[in-house]
Length: 133
Image 1 (cartoon, rainbow, N blue to C red):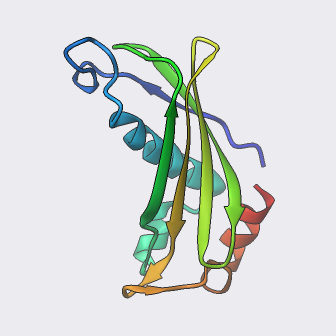
Image 2: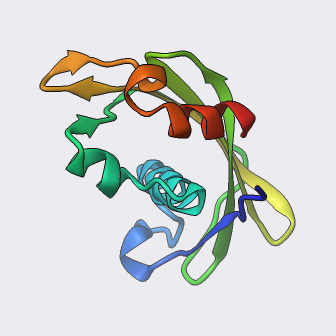
């Protein structure tokens, strides 16, 4: 299955006084892209949460390459960098106008009732899709 990149148009309120997209917003853009990625797999976070499992972020790393501004469209590609039964690491490549503006990773675990849960055991179909991705 081919996953399409997520597109985000920078809003005015996402920019600082210099007119540059504030660095903290890239974390939010990652979340938007990750949620879209899961939806494209056919197993959104809303479905997982409805079944009692949450996936908190345990680590984030961003490398800012070039700035973006109001109305710029950032295309965000999401790839799985690493998986195990208990965690997943996503890679993000954000581009605008053909140049990379940010590369990033986020690491997530899976919890049910506040305790670690095996994605492989709890959601085997999703785990298989993630492994293939």
